[in-house]
Image 1 (cartoon, rainbow, N blue to C red):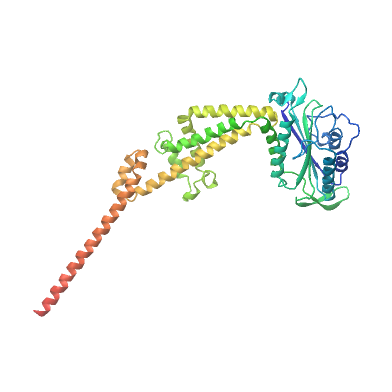
Image 2 (cartoon, helix red, strand yellow):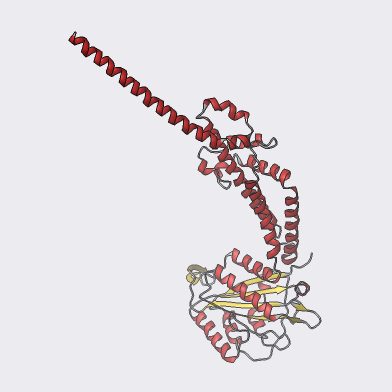
Length: 414
């Protein structure tokens, strides 16, 4: 099994831990550097890189990478002193520290033009940009974009090029939780350190997508999905009359709730109708969008292969394809429901004209729908005629009644 192109390892340490103390001490340390063995494939917490160890050689000339932050590409001694003070303040205020390692497959990185095997060098400008954009995404997802501080260093004196990142809050903003200490058998409060699972997913995706820009290809996927739905709305094909869908169309309508406000594809109230709607969608796409669907699947398979290379066999790389196909199904389902609402309204309009009832069913669905506006106009005209006739009848009645009254009075004088 091929190793993934991008590997993310994340953990956090508490403010009272030795790891936090050691990191602060190593920020501006100038002692001899040590080479650290990196276990890229390990998923065990105990085998995670000891964070202060790799900071112990962060200024090693052999690996050439240097500490950088969100604002500075290089830190002088004064910068490091200020950074150390900020991390000390974070520890005093009981903030946790997050430690992340992003590791890359060198061959994949070379394929993207960021690593040069002959000289064993990395495009550090681009890599710093990747890290900065990634950390912005991470901190924003955790609501820490205005409060967190972080520092990172790039290393390539091991088999896999990797970036180490440490982040904390000098003035903690996260909620406090009651935590039980098994050693002391006591409860105490500490700031929530665990990140949301979605945050780590975003972090990994941001790194990969920054390096391998697939915006153009993914826009093509979205255009195919939206374009197919738009074509359904614009081309005038009536699924209520089309021979392969009309029975399914009618069956779906019979299973829809009476409240038309609930005729939305995502509503649970249409669960009984959804299988029929999905089948109508499938037939429509097979009959009228053969090439579009072929192109969509090719594009999705290409994206799946790219993500498989980036994230490895064990990842949910194929979820992207299913998500896009589900999106198409939902959009098409709502387009079908729009036609069902219009069809239902057209049928109700016809009920006002008994003489027109049989003619309505003799028309094709397209003709019936086109005839809708004429039907409404005819109904309004008929109501006006009826009202006028009733006024005239009443006028005649009043006239006859007055004449009878006049004759009665005249009979009294004779």
